[in-house]
Image (cartoon, rainbow, N blue to C red; front, top):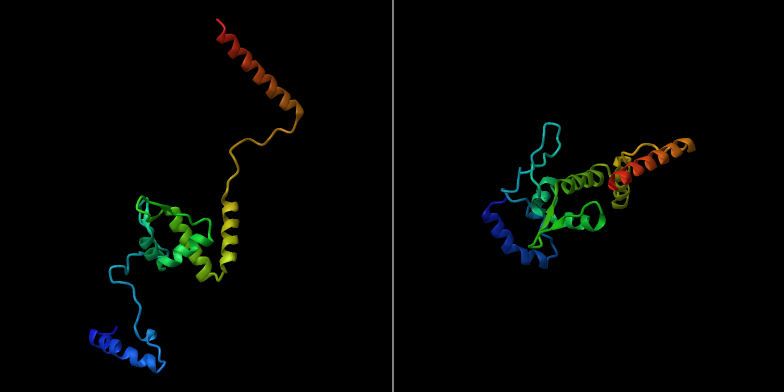
Amino acid sequence: MFELNTLFILFELTPRLRRLNIRTAHLVPRTMPKSAKNTARKSASGEVVIPDKIYFRIGEVGRLCGLPCYVLRFWETEFPQLKPSKGSTGQRMYRRLDVENALRIKKLLYEEGFTIAGARQQLRAETKRKQTPLPFAAPATNMSQLKQVRQGLKDVLGLLSSKAKP
């Protein structure tokens, strides 16, 4: 880490170095503020532990994911699964599902090597697989069963209509 004197000297030399066409951006380390470090807790297995909250601000999600906020804003335009709501002040408010989706997108893009279009398709396929069928019974294909059900419904309707007329 550079000390203050080193940064001051670098600041003073920057105009001269630019005239010589020497770039200085690589000389100054870009780090997260100390308060932002280590807020993303990881479990023993290496997974990020998401705090038990209802809403997260974009800065908190950025720290949890280890990403700058502008990346999350860009992903909102690219991935329909990532749709944070906006509060009354216009601040993006991520729910737990949004944070999990952001972590999944990061894993697909950075660890598994997907392109943005490929990650979008993968997420779409995963959500289709996760959808459970409706809890209705399998449709009766036998006509005699359908006739029995219809007759039973007519009987119930007859009972209800006869009780309604005293």
